[in-house]
Length: 305
Ligand SMILES: Cc1cc2nc3c(=O)[nH]c(=O)nc-3n(C[C@H](O)[C@H](O)[C@H](O)COP(=O)(O)OP(=O)(O)OC[C@H]3O[C@@H](n4cnc5c(N)ncnc54)[C@H](O)[C@@H]3O)c2cc1C
Image 1: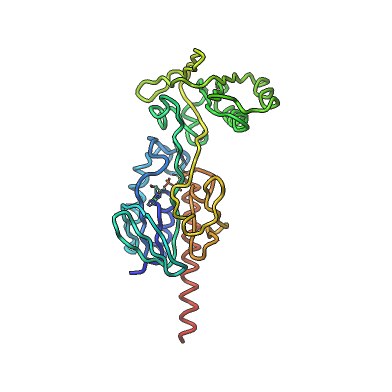
Image 2: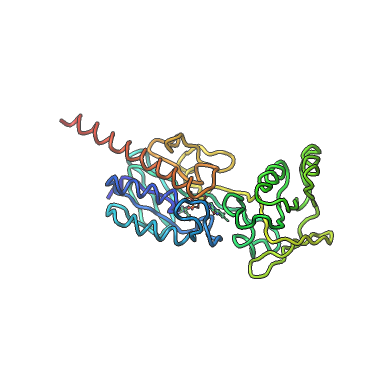
């Protein structure tokens, strides 16, 4: 069987595309290995009607609602290779299944490169976060540590000032900031420490203090840090999709990549990193894919009459 579209990745982006395509009566399979970037968190915030929902509950409800549409199928599997051209793609999975498809949507997200800081993994997603829009409200007015360096330090400090005025910057080694940036932070009374972090002390995921190699201990109740991100999958690159240095698939406003018949959506194709934005891009890609499929059939029918 040749599917109308194989969607690789079943997070908010892939699932919203599946919903749109299912309602448009297209045969779709969503291949998802189930390792979203936000799997460390207990709550997803800022998604209208779903504020505070757990990532797993979000996916459960999404799949329940999509299951009403019989042309959408789910495969708990990993896509390991992809070949072919528009109208004739073949996707092979880790379990050995080969899916034929007319179109492909990459909704593979991004992955964190783990920061080598002792104790960070114990607090990540519980009291250490990456985005103030996602988790700043919960930590408002609290004493925080920002682990960040370079130009990002001033940017994150400015952002955090909207949620709390009690924060300290730890650059965990050379600060890589200009003297102007440091001056601006000093004018706003933001302490900066460049001694490497020795460990993050916590209790059941709740950070208590950040200890530096020079003996300084900074008590705090939360941490924000800038993660390094990479593409969620090498498959877009393998198929010839143009990618940015940050590992983002380059798409136009309809989600189309430079490879005919291949689309990208969500974190994998943007740097917005919000679940609702990922879902929106998935919906847009779903509409574009459906339009393309309809026009191809429409034109074929006209030729055969
Ligand atoms: C700690 C943390 C907290 C966050 N909190 C919030 C929040 O409160 N609010 C908010 O709006 N956003 C939050 N985010 C961001 C949010 O998680 C992402 O923006 C959103 O999940 C992106 O959706 P997506 O569908 O693009 O990718 P993802 O949700 O990451 O899903 C991608 C899926 O593709 C799968 N996949 C990848 N490669 C393959 C392959 N080859 N074969 C099969 N499957 C594959 C992955 O396993 C994964 O299941 C948070 C992120 C982090 C890290």
